[in-house]
Length: 202
Image (tube, rainbow, N blue to C red; front, side):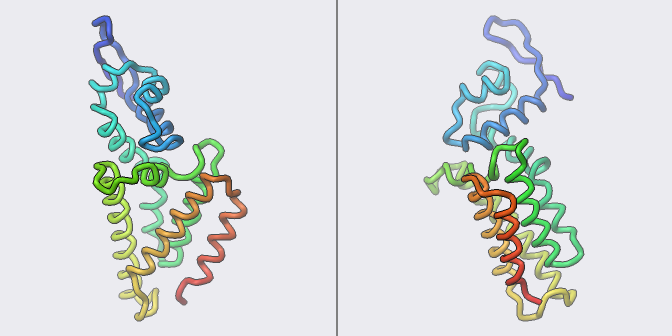
């Protein structure tokens, strides 16, 4: 537990748990999206005032970047773990099931923090839009490399297109996140996973 000392409005030191505050901020962004989240939303949820927020995390954009890092290492760590599965199909299945588990867990806001963020930033020149796009591209590249390895190992047919397969998995996952955010049930999303895997190359 990391304690942060900042200066409150009246000049007295104020201590708070930065990890807990970051987790609280993550859930606000996850629920409302980047543009839909105000500084008042954040300070209320984090239990700190604006000077404390700025001192500990920087501005809203800087805080959101820290939240994205926390999200990668926490709720969405299943994406990285799925890459370790022994077969390409298990990689895809692990990622898809991870999306379903995360997006329908009643303890979480529905859907995915990343999808909420990207859909709320329509301007392609927006720094947050560019950040989210870069992270998506990085995840897709890691998935493509894993499928390239699967081809070299004989796990996928030699005529498979690793880039297309990576885009396919990413598209299914993002689509399921949108469905989860708009009320789709776990059963419905698992049916999507089952249908998607029927198209997997043998």
